[in-house]
Amino acid sequence: MPPSARVIVSPVCNVTCFDTEKVASIRAGLANEEHLLPQLAELYKLLGNVTRLKILLALAQGELCVCDVAHVLELTVAATSHQLKLLRSQGWLAMRNDGKMVYYRLHSEGLLKALQGDLSLLEERLA
View 1 (cartoon, one colour):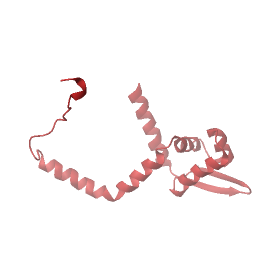
View 2 (cartoon, rainbow, N blue to C red):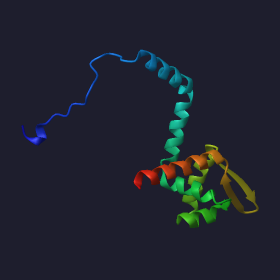
View 3 (tube, rainbow, N blue to C red):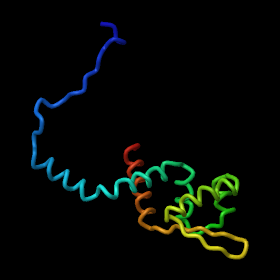
View 4 (cartoon, one colour):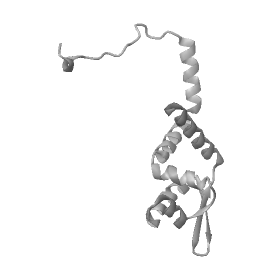
């Protein structure tokens, strides 16, 4: 048989359910968190953007005005403002006005800890 004609079959179980107690326990656990899963998926979608990740990591260093964030990212102020607005609308950033200046800061230390943990995990995996 030529290589292009090979069919790869994934292994499957020959029984309908092996450990019914474990399956029931896992289902119950998932049911308890099911109402949070759509919000978690939205968070991952929001974080699935390199620019927004850079913004969060930059603001981990402290509060910055929009133009300084734009310079860090080497983006226009308009493009930066758009990304900041998305993060703020989801509650991850806080904003304050000081005259004509607009400053942003992280609103969630938990998110920063999660990102730092994820970066450490990637470094370990790639080492």
